[in-house]
Image 1 (tube, rainbow, N blue to C red):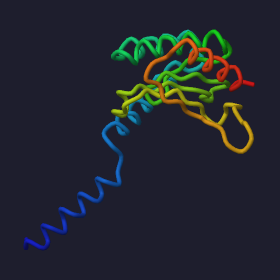
Image 2: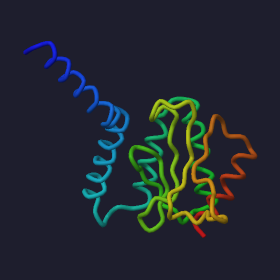
Image 3: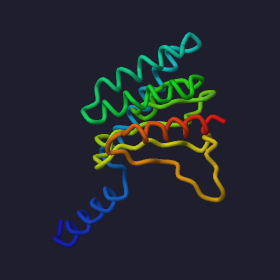
Length: 158
C-alpha cells in the first residue's frame, strides 16, 4: 500500500469516527436496549413498584453530587406528580405518563458534562408563548430550585 493510500484510509477512518456516536452515547443506547428487554420480560405483570425499584437502584449507583440531586428530584416528582410512573430511560431516572417519558434526570457524569440536567420531553405541557425552556442545568439544588422544579413538574402533567 502506498503512503497516499494509507493517508486516505486514515482520514476516512477519522471522519467516520467523528460523525458516529460517542462512547457515552453508545453506552446509553445499550442501556436503553437492556431496559426494553427487562420491560418485555416483565410484560403485563410489570408494576409501578418495579420502575421505582429500578430508578432507586440507578440513583444508588450514582457518584456525588449527582446522587443527592437525583434523590431530591425523585422526591420532588413523587410529591408533585404522584401519577407519573418512575422508569429508566437510556440509563437515566425518568418519569412517564401513559408510557411516555415526561421528565428525566441526567447526571453530569453520563456524558462527561460539567452539570447535571433535569429535562422535559414534548409530552410535557410547559408551553408558554412561542418559546419556553425544556431542560435545566443543575450544579446543586437549592430550596428555591426545588420549589421551581416542583411547580414545573405539576404544570408538565397538566
